[in-house]
Length: 226
Image: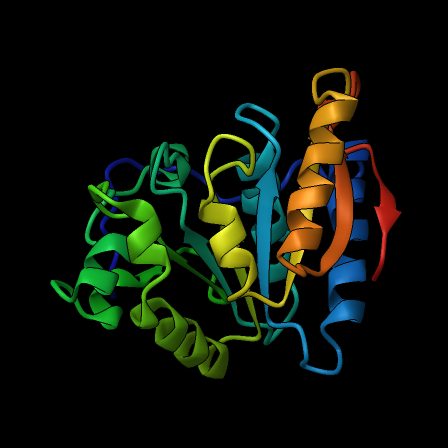
């Protein structure tokens, strides 16, 4: 069992009776519906800018999906700029995605088991000198293809769209995008800029998650195409 645990962090969703827990379970229902025909297996989760809640959304959605009996979920930290999944979950950062793509670590050594039987994690690994070049590589295409054969759903947390081109690159290698928008923070012009970028890349936007509401996160999916 590949643990690579730095300190123990309980992998639990917010209380199921809370608005937060209910919101993630509603999002899970939409994802299950969208992935029913197996045409969508790899979903990119990103945002316009930093600090808009994309990683929180990715982690909690992964936890929600892992509660579905027999549904194998993989959470991948492809934010090779400022990765945080390993810190939040108390994991060692490497070996991870960087080492797998560079060939210095095997896929088996990079996939980490968790206390949840149906949830596995690939951390970012060490930060590469040229993230975009690594994400554009044939190795990543081959990796995603292989992972699709082993998991029911792959959730890919990426760097934000406006500061970096990483998510644009990844959009062509995944089956759809969940865009996380922070209530009261994400500017309308940033959303328009992101929409234009995604259209240029012919990316399929599955839905938009409204995050950072006053009472709970996320509040709702206010735009969805599931």
